[in-house]
Image (cartoon, rainbow, N blue to C red; front, side, top):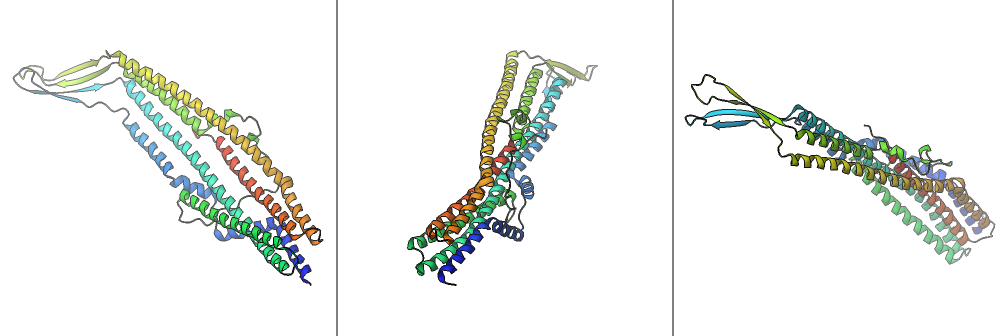
Length: 418
């Protein structure tokens, strides 16, 4: 076989490797994953939600509210007196002030509501951390997929550089084609190094989230092969905002409104009279009644201060309601934005699934056929391979964009456990 036919034979082998790039990519990644014992998303979530400081802090806040609830109906300290009623001797007395039972009952209800708020806050924290973890896991999957794509392509371009060098030495191609091949290989190799660094970074982020000493790999990114459809709940435009009423953030604001209502009830109860019971020693040692008792009534004469407290509690209810409405509005706007991103990323991904990937394959096919027939030179062939590879890179990016938008969309469909 002469030098010219041998070079074209080598390019033909490169072409077939390029056409089989998706299969090579999948097989090599499966081997990598099998050897690395990848961390699953379920295990990552379990470890993260168990060890994350914000979750632990949320549990402690619930415990604190439970501890405070036990002291919600605490009595005032008793008053002990040491008096000299007659000027002849001193005597000791004791009295205990009480509020009406409805005050203590309302205080207990208020304390229970504080527990409900901390529980709702924990659900909000869990939802937000879960979303961050899922996105971090997806980025690790995407980074791994990029490495395998660039690694396979790097191997192909390395062979191309070797072949173009031999062709140049044989006088079959120009120095421009040889230099261009080397430049393209350098670019691909640099992208491979960058992708490898990104894998290390994303896995380190997961180490921080999970508390594991080391994570070697995560499960492979799912590569769809057929057109995707939007989830049924994402097909309506604009999206149905009614579902947001079950979102943990909205539920948290609903609990805040309940708390404000209980605070108003307590302010009203505290404006009611109280009473006290006391015991006094006799004022005269020679009296026939040795034990004396006192009964007192606290009268809320300073009504203005109680009125102001009730008005402030009423204002707090209005504040809580407006904060809830503001949160609803923010969620609706964010949901609408994510819905648009989900639709756009789905359209982009479906383009590659329906025609983009096929176009890349046809580019490689025609470029190779024309090059083998001598109808085009090596430079055009290399440029066409570059364009075909760029489509594959964009396809991988479109998968990542869609999956990330879908994760954020699912966040808006969360329902509080309460």
